[in-house]
Image (tube, rainbow, N blue to C red; front, side):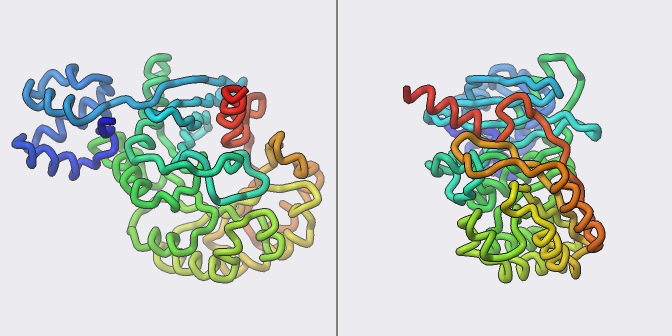
Length: 353
């Protein structure tokens, strides 16, 4: 299979073109056609000479994703199920926010992290996505909005879809550099958030990247016993070394970090857990922000239920009294397959019948 041209940073494209006898300036022309004019064929790149267009055609492909299903929510959320060139399925989500159009991208086919409440982990990881496959998710959503004539652009990105982004670190970083480049999509680094389940070693690496990209940590429990029970990753990276990595990140970047906390009824939603969480984060409170997330039930995880609204508000109030900035996340797409990975899982099951 040909390589996705979306996977090349501008610097990589320049190097490739020069290695193949082409002029350096061609790279910016090509990027203009890809990211500003958003063409789907190399033949449409009219100011690029024929020799260069043929060279690109021989070695690269622009579009690799095949749209299988699109679900439209009443609140404006749109979920896309794409088939990859090898037949695997991934999900991408467009969320309409007051501050702009946000896209949630997938970084792996399946997930090996093993969170017991999550639809993404129902199917084990079969491979990483290439950087081009991740970039193309953004491009396909942008083209969808172009076709609707909305005049909107993708303004924010959350790397929170299927998979663990830090388990696909090199492709993640290439993706971030492509979408952030001012000569490409120009999506501001501060409008991009990467979520990790807690790969502590990669948090150190990410802190050293000198990027303004936001970091979110999927915490979901304030102590090792509970976190290990619901998140297998805690066996490899318990809370104490994980918090040391977070401290390093905060010291190195001085950037606020979001702690994601899915509230599971009668599991991790008691006032006791809220008090433990407030105590854990108190020394980081000036740069800590807790995102309380109502649980989207998953058919295969019947042991978990959404927290009652009263419990959610008690948890919220306890954190606020403990001096911790927090919010209850606004929900999107609750009338469609809202949980990440749910649409993909259902489609695979249908295909197997």
